[in-house]
Amino acid sequence: MIQLTTPFTEEKIRALKVGDAVEITGIFFTGRDAVHKYLHEGGALPPGVNLRDGILYHCGPVVVKDGAGEWKVTAAGPTTSIREEPYQWQIIRDFGIRGVVGKGGMESRTLEACREHGCVYLHAVGGAAQVLAECIKRVRNVYLMEKFGAPEAIWELEVERFPAVVTMDSHGNSLHEQVLADSRRALASRL
Amino acid sequence: MNALPESLLELIRRTSAEIPDDVQRGILRSLEQEKKGTIAESALKLIERNIAMAKAKSQPICQDTGSVIFYVDCPIGFDQVRFEETARDAVKLATQKGFLRQNSVNSLTGKNDGTNLGPGAPMVHFHQHRSPEVQVRLILKGGGCENVGAQYSLPDEKLHANRDLKGCRAVILDAVLQAQGKGCGPGVLGVCIGGDRATGYEFSKTQFLRKLDDRNPVQELDSMEQEILATANELGIGPMGFGGKTTLLGVKICAANRVPASYFVSVSYMCWAFRRQGTTLDANGAIAGWLY
Image 1 (spheres, rainbow over the protein chains, first blue to last red):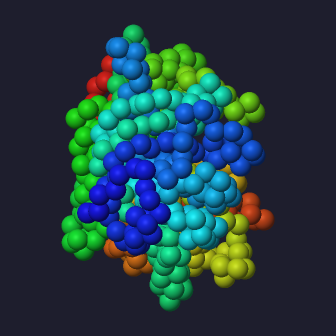
Image 2: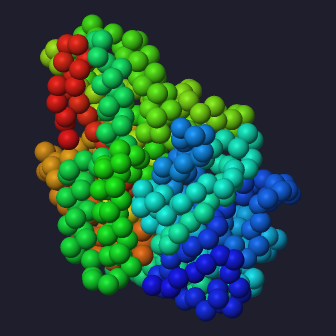
């Protein structure tokens, strides 16, 4: 198990290969459909959100306020990443993200941006909202909550030993491409 | 029906936090089958841990608590208007309690008012019967798996699918291939052969009310279910699309009549976080028993 801590250096990210199991400690910023479209259309990152050398997590958590008025994440697995395929390459390029955490994998434009800019796609287990919420130790802040609502807001989270697998690395390799090609061949011989 | 509000809240809580036994057994079986030390195996182990944690903490198995779909079997004369009002209140309260995420967005304005109420949210399907019994079933269907559902219109020349069961098989397996790991596999397919575009999808979802280990009473459909399950699990897509032996936990197929001009095959995909529960209610609306 490879331990990673944010912020990342390019060198550290380039050393990762498809199939590596990692645990990440540090800061996650969440961002999903509304945030991607907003940034793609030229929207500004709210002050306080710094994605450079960090993680963008495709996630819309369940968040409740506890008795003391503090936000508490009670469920926080990844959402399907492929919907961000039209935007992700640009956001990796413009904001210097080193790791995209999500599920289901992404396609060629994102893979190419990972290769060009030194970024990886980290696959978390979809649906595992409790195990992953347990890794979130604290909510630091929330941005664009009014505009987008809780699931689509940018949440700044402190995470500890968040488990993920590198499924797209910065050298042009994608587990998703490989499984798709193999399964397509397997199906063709069974039709 | 004084106890109805409490019963529906408990139904929502339990559906969101506890996986049905039949599904859990399926996941355990797939964990045994995956090769030790693979990322597929560790994904399934994490899923197992997640199921136990959600139950112990009474919190959502998955943060996407999905579309809220009630299926109500009720006697003639049952007050459906009151039921629907009570269901809406229960959904709102369950959202405040964190059993459901603030998950319902106005499609025109993009606003999420945090109540989970709006046109089509929640959805309630009533079915009258001649027995006095009231049964309420609930499915919480996440968006990730809903997005990989597909509707095919046969013939589909690209997939060499004609208007016969062989053609149906080809398009159903195509849906599995296209879904890869995006719907949070290992998943379950609910399929309807025939119907119009709306009833096709609607009937495909009612297949998720069946237990995973039941058998289809229609012989052709039963063979198709078994064969497609076996073939899908030979494709190597595996849990989360990581590669591996379990791509699907189950395949459930029904057929509806169609007009001669149409031949739809509607495929709904349910993720491993298969949230389905049901209860029988007594005359006061209290929970008399669980259905799964």
